[in-house]
Length: 383
Image 1 (cartoon, rainbow, N blue to C red):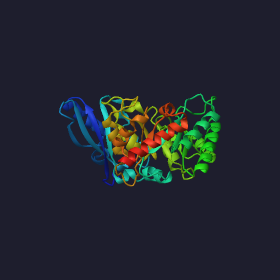
Image 2 (cartoon, rainbow, N blue to C red):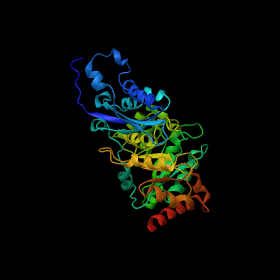
Image 3 (cartoon, one colour):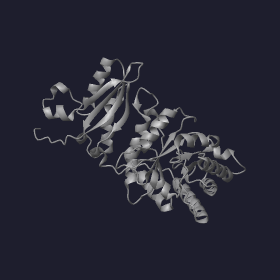
Image 4 (cartoon, helix red, strand yellow):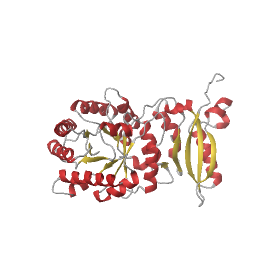
């Protein structure tokens, strides 16, 4: 063990801990061991392991004035991660996720942590450029409800594309059910959007849901690519973050990847435990290669707050060189009447996802889409 060589480079993870000061300090020290060696510290005689491999508490301070919550910054040697996303997640929260009252607030990566990751292939700037949109948010909607056949979904896709929507994604509930097989749906919808793009000269994207087991997800992604799909929808909470990363980094696919939040709510629903919104939907989505990240906006049918959404957008877009920013996609019951408010809060470098409400406006679905783009254009022109 005397030949153990370490670079000295460390990265930091910030944890919020609930409890008294003494218990929170003890838990911070336990995190240092649990997330690295997971071995009784008193039985480790090698000084290099104790001094360099163990996590180290860099700072510890009260969180707010009410007491009972503490913030600890713990650093880790970059070598404990290697070059794998799975191991990075293991070091950040692994076994400690099994303990109540501890929440991962953010990751402060070092260059060595970021080096193995490609991040988003397109990101914010790439998506806006690819779709030839400037000065306004991208517009997105979903093909639904579950139970429609491929031909009906394709007719919806035509109406959405003709109405001016930039990105038409499968609803995350559309998989490979007997009600509508994946191959049939993707072929029909990709053809419908391609034909409308040829007619209009626009670049609307059809983004099918390829979420499945790793091998099937890759298989479906290639089927989607061959059919002419414009991107891939992936729910990493269901199929795994590294599955999404593999799809994003595959040079033969080279399609934009949209991250869907299904099943991820269990990580942050308790404010005293889990993973903070910004780390989960922002930093982690970027490391796993997502070009856009869907999340429930405040004011919709989910419980996200303005503060949580603001922190999420900050983590999705702030500098994390060389990892590109990921495009925020507020969703979750958004309505057309909220367009001015949403643009004021989120700005123009986002993708607004409106689903069911598009069907409520105008005399046709196409007209509802045109009302959507008209309201967005009016707000951006006035601003």
